[in-house]
Each structure stands twice: as C-alpha cells, then as structure tokens.
Length: 319
Image 1 (cartoon, helix red, strand yellow):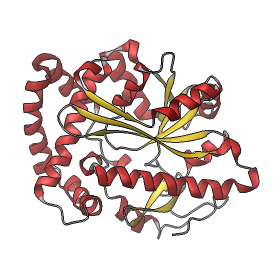
Image 2 (cartoon, helix red, strand yellow):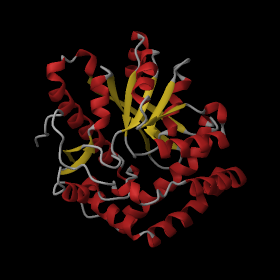
Image 3 (cartoon, helix red, strand yellow):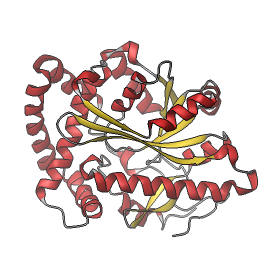
C-alpha cells in the first residue's frame, strides 16, 4: 500500500479525533479507584475485584465492545469469542492495577523479560538520545524497569497537554520521585525541549498511534487493513535527525511482562532529499512491528475505538 509523501498534507485531518471526543476509560477517577484497591487490598485480592470491573466494562460499554469486535478478529486470525473480549478488558484493568505498584518501583512483584535491551545500550554508548515510539498497547509503566539495568538512564515523555496534566497528577500522588519529565506536545517550545533531551542522551517516549484534532494523518496497513496513523511523530523524528525505536510492555497474564524494543529508523543517517521516503518506510516498519505485537498478545490492544472505521471516515474528509 502506498503512502503519500510527507511533503503533502494527506487526507484524514479531522476536526476532532474519536478517541479525544469521549472520556478515556483510564481516566483519573478510575486510576484513583485502582490505587485505593491496590494499596488497601494488595495485589492478589485486588485482582479478584478486577473481574467485577472487567465484567461491568464489558456489559456497559457498547462502543468499546464494537471496537473490540472490529480489532480482535484481525489480531486473532479467527472470529472473536466473548471470552476474547473479556480477556482484552481484563488485561486493560490488570495493567492499570499494576501501574500503582510499578509507579512505586515494586518491580520485585513482577516477572519481567526484556527483548532488544542491546539497542538501548548502543544508544547510551554513543552518547545519543533516541525517540521511543509506543502505542496504547500493554503497559508503558513497566518499561521503566529498563532503568534497573541502565544506571543514569534519563527518560522523558512527550504527550498531548491534557494527558500530560493527568499523568503528572497521578505521578505526584503515587510517587513523586519516580516522575519523569513530561513534555506537553502542541506547545511552541515542545520541539526545543525534545531536542534538548535527546542532546543530553535521554530517551523520549511518544505514543505514536493516535492523532489529536486536525493533525495530519496517513493510511498504513495495520493487521491487514488500512488505518490512519499520525504523521507528526515521524516528521518530528526526521526534523530532529533522531534515531527511533519501537517500545512496548506486553502483558502476558499473572505477573508476567515482556519489554520489547525494535529498530524503526535512524534519521541522522538520512539525507534531506530522502526524508519523505524514510518517513514512509518508518511508518510502515512501525505498523509492522505493532501488528506483530498485537498478534502475539492480542489482549494488549487498549484502543477502544475503531481504527479501521476511522480510516473509512477520514478518507472522505475534505483537505
């Protein structure tokens, strides 16, 4: 499937992204509830309560059920059963529950495997920072476990301003000492801050699977069908001449997680005349690795809206 060159404004710039129009299920109120359960009941007892929360979500969130039915057959390669939908919702609740312990640095409670750690070591050895492109897939907090093996590792997060305020509030409440720097995207100095952190050798995490408002998007093939992905993160990486690694913290049930890093692009080696082609290739590579993770751990997909219907809507929007 072809992707328009990055120098052109692609179709799919909508007035408001669907995910931004409805409240996130992982909002502050739910996080506070999960924090209370975690801190007062402990992890084993708290996980019993998760089944009730997951059942409630499955019954009373019809839009999320529709989105789940649109996603799961693509990831599973077969028709989805109700147990598949429940497993997806329970995994979502479980990672939020575990977030409380991970933000308190209780990594000892978990069995965490790391794949691609040598990629991080190589970046640190070069004295260069890198952009870590993730998605709403699995747990971001568990990725902080990489710091146990990399002393002095600096991590910053770049996210939309409203989400930045929410995550800052959560981190302040649970463990202020564990709080990474959060860079609010959309502000005039955001690019300068990201550039400064990369120059210091820091890793800057970006969730590259969602757009906001009228941000330009382009179609890529994801799990066998076209979906709209935001162009902005990849343009930013090209403008900053930054290396890009894929990141994911996949949840496998119980206390088991896999942290995965994979190479996406290194724009420091790309001549300016070839940037559009390099952005095209990077977006394709990102979608390919993301799809691999979805097939390996289908219940880790936490975008509870229809990516593929979003493509059908976006492609008829005027420029």
